Image (cartoon, rainbow, N blue to C red; front, side, top):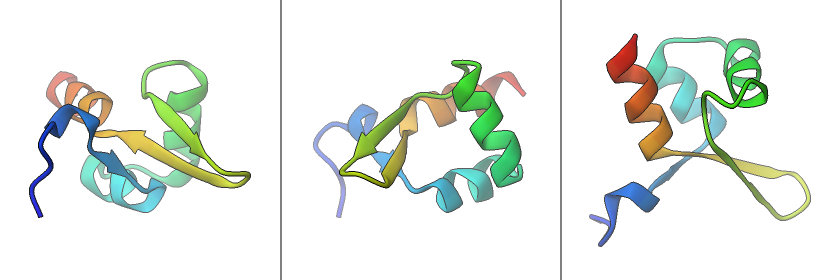
Length: 60
């Protein structure tokens, strides 16, 4: 399924780590530092925005 707005695509933590070839610890550090955007879903769910993953990947 192709989203209507790719900038709104969300990745699980595992998907984002795999796409960026980084560890979960490093991903959380990048979120804490504001270098990746995360969205909280419910009480425990977190998703990483595709736009921030793409932006980070293009810079590194």
